[in-house]
Image (cartoon, rainbow, N blue to C red):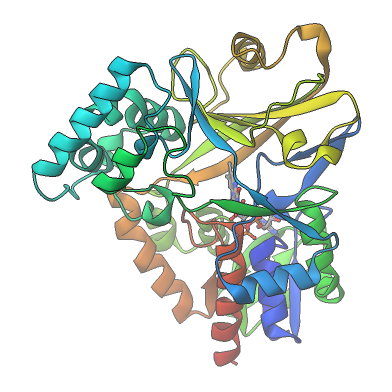
Length: 422
Ligand SMILES: Cc1cc2nc3c(=O)[nH]c(=O)nc-3n(C[C@H](O)[C@H](O)[C@H](O)COP(=O)(O)OP(=O)(O)OC[C@H]3O[C@@H](n4cnc5c(N)ncnc54)[C@H](O)[C@@H]3O)c2cc1C
């Protein structure tokens, strides 16, 4: 085979489209999609937590629209922050309207003070927060939220991952946000696309149609012989000229047996996410797609409402909510009860008896940690692997913070590199 692709998520499938022929996809699961699969439980449609398509590039938009199994709806974002007992618009940093007066004043004064103190620090994410957004926004949102999400010291996080994911507003934007209807549309995800039915997996199902002929499911890659360019997987082995990997980078490196690379990759870290999806009886209209929850009295850092994104995601007379709790190591003990209590305290679920479905999911390497170790190891690993005809694509393949659209773009790019190596 000219190119073997590890993984049939968005990145692997896009790579197959880029190659057009002479490829074999090896996927360890029984169905394609990776993290963009969807489970249907008692009529509730649950993605592996909220998966909303933000399509910035016309080429990727056209590729997805043309191949999705179900038409996609363009939906205006309804994203909020819940703190001090009130919902305010996302992003927090430009939407002080609606917060208690003392908190809004603290946020504004801190922001203006930071603006007059000169250029933001690039030393660490924590310093960047203080010097760009000020101590009020740091204390009331950015620190508690990010500590909850990353479960890693923020002073050890570098800045490369932030890009479009963390808005850095101007004074004008912040001032507009002290009035009703603050600056809307700020941030990378002002609108998104989502399938009319079937959850995010229905996009994968359509795309996979064009790659299925060259794919094997339940075919976990177990070993890679880089010298002889062979992969060994459940049920077989295959030679390659180029290999495209979308599986998590540290696991890929372990399969090669290369001691130097294994040592380097052992410095790469990620935060895991426990997601409890809940379907419950409710006639209430929540009018929200997702909500960031910074306060430590709630165990989740974010929740979202699949049934508000498209009504078909829940049976009639019901609603659904996904909850995201991050952890390093093992999921916290007794977490389900704490999540349900949190949802009751927030007034989302009225009574435990209303719960019809509770569907947990574990996302092992959800958020790649950007620290000095990653900054050192990643370029070396990428270079060494490329020298041996191995190309990386996707969020975990390239060990980065990125989206479904990025995975598609990187799949096509990896295909080009693979072909140039024939
Ligand atoms: C909490 C969370 C929320 C997110 N929300 C969004 C969102 O709203 N919008 C958005 O655009 N993106 C979102 N993302 C990012 C999105 O999930 C990824 O960008 C996308 O899934 C990456 O696709 P991929 O093909 O690179 O990886 P994957 O989907 O992980 O595909 C890799 C595949 O490789 C397979 N594999 C692994 N090991 C082996 C092996 N040894 N042999 C064979 N196969 C193997 C896996 O089974 C998997 O199918 C989110 C991510 C997280 C963690």
